[in-house]
Length: 378
Image 1 (cartoon, rainbow, N blue to C red):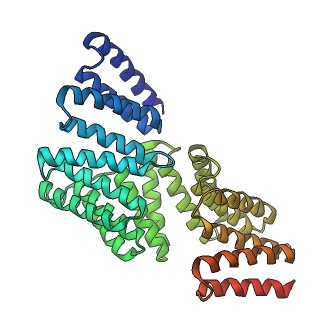
Image 2 (cartoon, rainbow, N blue to C red):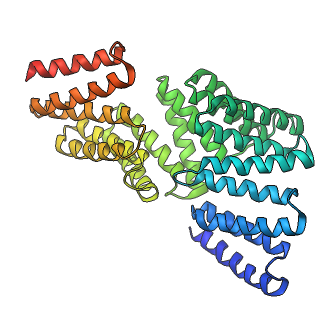
Image 3 (cartoon, rainbow, N blue to C red):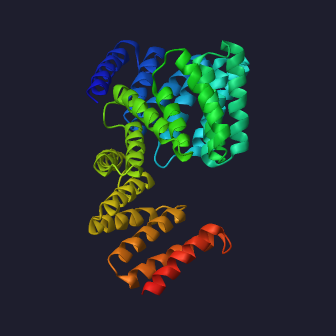
């Protein structure tokens, strides 16, 4: 943070001097505004970042016209801001990226800039759930980069990783893993240890964890965390993601003290950045509660579960997360021999699962068995 503060101060002073000497609308002022906007974006000061990029765009369009590469650069930055906001403004982001693509396509044809525009357009389609368009954009981006740079360039790795993300979103984990590992190999070939490398290692680790390859997953999470700390310091969402992942593996191994250490660190970072009601915060609280339940600390477990369910209920689309917590609360009450509360929570869990999956689903049948067992015990 100190690094960013120093950078922002130096750029702000430079901007004042340029505006006094060159005027408010000089192209060099636009360059400095873009640099200040980038610092704001990295600090997640999105409103300030957007204002800087928007001002830079106005100056560049005045001096260079609407179809200049520098104008496309501003549209891309503005798209990045809208996509990164919480909640993201994805339709706006898509419009800005498409404006950049139209400019680059008109000026350059199949170029690295066009490939980057397509990559960002694909990422928005992926976030909106339009996986067909996402896959199409990412594959076109990757093809252009391979044509421009060759198959072993880091830009090609970005495209491969993005295609992997789409396949993971589709639930095709084996196919996703193939693309992630191809991207990883390209980055490794270039001796790159940046955020892209950290993210792909985390993605590979998460798939391997689901496949039961926890030792390999743990190795990847730890290595990614080292890179994240070197890039961002201790208090970054990427650090929290890998702390959470390490905590879940240690929890599964019943190394509960170490698990709680990592989960608590992840929670502290996510809470500070995202707030109480964010799904990632709720999920971390839930896992901390599960840690306490495994330790036999039922009161602490119940408190965390109740905090988690309150947070999940504030966000649409998290019905299955609510059901997951209800089931765990039911188990806590079973341990306390409070069968009335146990039955109540298991019944509500079953109701949600029936609505989501239908009455014949095997997961619903399992929930019915859990409820009936609690009823018999009551």
